[in-house]
Image 1 (cartoon, rainbow, N blue to C red):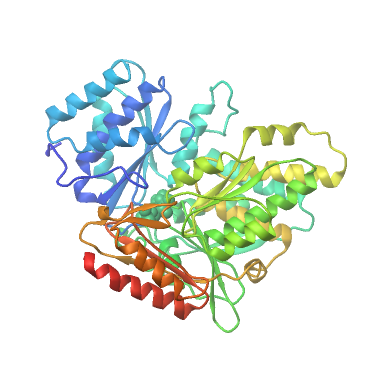
Image 2 (cartoon, rainbow, N blue to C red):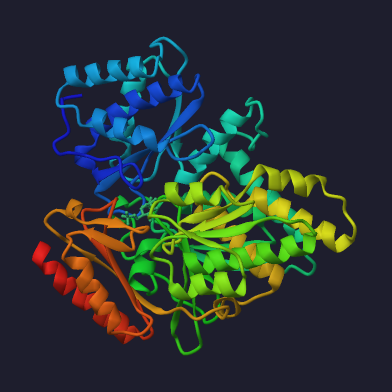
Length: 526
Ligand code: G16
């Protein structure tokens, strides 16, 4: 490593470290040091490191650590990651590392196992080298899993560890092929259970990222059931990643990505750069674009689970976890139509995941398409052991169990989530427009704004209110009073050097006006 310290301060944020790739080799080296320690601390269980910057521009990159059951790094370790990464010299780095070994009572020569993967970014190989050299220096057993989607790495970590983990059922064959087979087998199983399920087709904008490669590998296993057409699958030009395409582009701009010429009423989907998010959409006959975002996916899934649980004769507490970005109409639909609880957490899968795990079946989705459905172990056990009274009851139980295999239990997964959407639409024989008609969204707008120091924006109430700058929230409150059914908030991004502005109101004009006023207010902090 030529540098002794990162050129700028880095923070383990919403989704690990994320910054311009040029700043990151030293950071990845130190991520490797910490990953080996984390594995040792956990008795030699395998931990993961994913090198990706997901929805960010091609020049960025990042790294996140994955804990043994495929969850995000335990939050209490994030501060250690940040402190170690920002050491100002090799001597300071070693001193800090030694202090952590002592603090956690970990022996330097105990077992450490780390598996890592990267997305398709040009900077990936350099960062892999930095990580690998740190793992070597720590005598850790290191496995390079190559180019994968983020959720595939999470799957591998969990599958490896649960092969021999008392109290945990094996999660699947710990290979990339095992991942595809698990998804395809459960999809096929549902197709044999649900009466008259028809084959479906979907065009997927893969953001010119890793999702394209992986969808191509899955497709033959679902032949005859799902037909995939790939758009924006150019991984040979890394500069094209997320450029005018991908889930973040479509959600933020509320319009079609480049290179998609829609056929009315057909389903389309967009993944992000590392395929952990998905949003869907369609156009109507008049050419109007209709977004089916994370809120629509959450409500589709929650309604199906409510129906199947009720048919199954079991009692399961189903709940939905959302963030401040959730459209107010989706929250109302869940609470008043589906009659199940909604819990709010700050942005970041790590927050939503923990809240969802408290339900028997916990559906969590961010509006940007990041999410999954968690099945509590006791729910799965009770579905497996319940006395079955009728064929209809058995059918619902089998569908629920197959869905628990189809849906990635470790983290949001664009491929698995898309299959869940497709299978629900197929079970119900619904068009995208029928799905969309469950509730009408309030008009909304999502903006980014550059400020001189985004850390001055601190929030409370699941990020729905600003604490600082303290003069700003009263102005936002005043603004909301002027528009019916309106809501707006400002929060600092954890992945980009911007603050995000969300506005929602009864009409698109009002949502736009509110957003414009907030941008104007933010000029003071530029
Ligand atoms: C990451 C996080 C998501 C979050 C998104 C944007 O997604 O995993 O939970 O919604 O960043 O976060 P922020 O608004 O703080 O920038 P991804 O897909 O980029 O890994």
